[in-house]
Each structure stands twice: as C-alpha cells, then as structure tokens.
Length: 242
Image 1 (cartoon, rainbow, N blue to C red):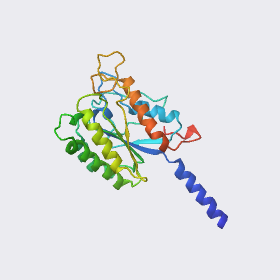
Image 2: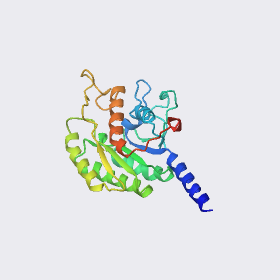
Image 3: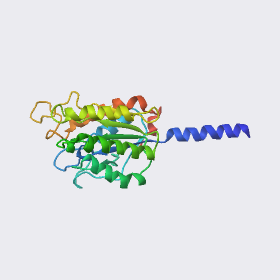
Image 4: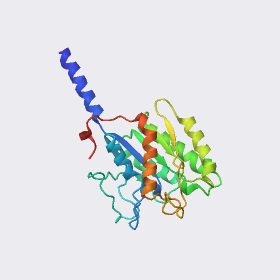
C-alpha cells in the first residue's frame, strides 16, 4: 500500500509538472494589435515562437481573441496555430484596462505569469502617479488575489524621450515596492536599442508607437529574457502547447 501511495504521488506530481504555463498578456493596442492593412501581429506572435523553440509548454489566456479589426489574421507559428487569447484593448488608458479586468479576470484561468504593457495612452496626463502607477498597483493586487504566487512583468514604454522619461522611474519604484519573493514584480526595458521614429532607417515602429514586425520581435525577446530565469522548461518538445 505504501508503495502504491508513493507511486500515486509521483504520478500526480508529473501531471502537475506537465501543465502548461498560463500567460496573461495585458495592455492597450500594442498588446491587442490587429489592423488588417499592416502586419500588426504584436509581440504575442514572436513570443509564442520563442517559447516553443525553448521547449516551454504554455497557454496564453484572456477573454479576447481578435485584433482591432475582425478581418485581421495572425499567421501560424512554426506550423502550429497561433494562440490568440489576450487582454489587450486598443486605445485604452491604464485605468480603463484595470476596470475591464475587474469584469474579465474572475472568469479566466489562474495566470502563472502576467505581462503588462500600459501607459502609452496616459502620457499626456498631468499626474502619472494617479493615471498609471495607481491603476498598475490595482492590477497587481487583482492578479495576486487570483494567484498569490503570480509572476508579474511590467514593460516600460518604448519611447526614449518625452513623458516616458518621467514615467519610467515611477514605474520602476512601484515594481521595487510591490515585488515579493513569492510574487516578483519585475520591469522589462523595451526602450533599450529601440528606434521609435518610423522615418529612421531600421525603425521598430509603423507610426512611432505601434511596433512593426522587427519591433515585435524585439519586444518578444525582451519579455522572454526577463521571464527566462523563472520559466520551467520541458525536456520533450512534443509536450508544447499546440
């Protein structure tokens, strides 16, 4: 009997280990994407490719599956279907996304990792603490209520001038204050090696804000580099999420 119990324990443990990592992408248009007249696939497309190549079993979660325009389509990832689930809202400010999450988050699967990229549409605000930092703090609290051990990654804005320079230290300070051993809150520096001017050779954007395919790959690589130390990997790539 004791041997059976031990075997049962390891069987259950192996099943739990094989469960896909649930990743919740939260943001505005840079997360949602989906204009039909350009390849606005967002970082979610190349990130899925990177995760699969790394042998990470994952499942993107979220209440939304489409881009801004329903006609916009995402290509397959290395011959496998694109996982479209997300919580991105085109044109939304940080507080608006927080309020939408109050409605959608309770019905979602429990996230293991949250990738948050918000604040682009709040840059003209006179009070970035009230319009960006406080809503971000609320979002982290909501995620932790869902999963006390959620790992949160907050992306800095992909701008190298203007209000982004004032917002950056505020978000950095917030992440340090909120981060814990059980639920780390880490920042991702998307602005590094970033060319936002679309008229510049080798630009990373279509229009200063929305990443083109090159920028999308840069964002995905930055997310993955930040996530990698906390990621489980699978030894058998056949376990990857289809």
